[in-house]
Image (cartoon, rainbow, N blue to C red; front, side):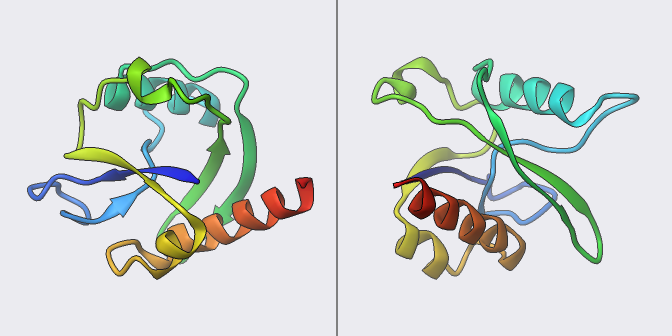
Length: 119
């Protein structure tokens, strides 16, 4: 399962879509500094023990995608500050979601493949 953000209807980019929590680096931040700042801003949560899933280059942007394994208490330990809400997605549900862009689905396919290999 993966936890995705439902973007606000008035968001500047992809309003009403689902996507990863996070965002771009500011000033001289490295990708991990940007991750920690963005997750704190969006979920009032400080991620630890995350791993880099991959670095993705697309036509209009590049992304570092990190993953974090969480426990059953995760939703009790966060507060959604940006976006409408967070939602858990199973693999098929995420990959079939029409309001999830293909760039995110590419990273999710990699994640689900990695999870299958770890079993």
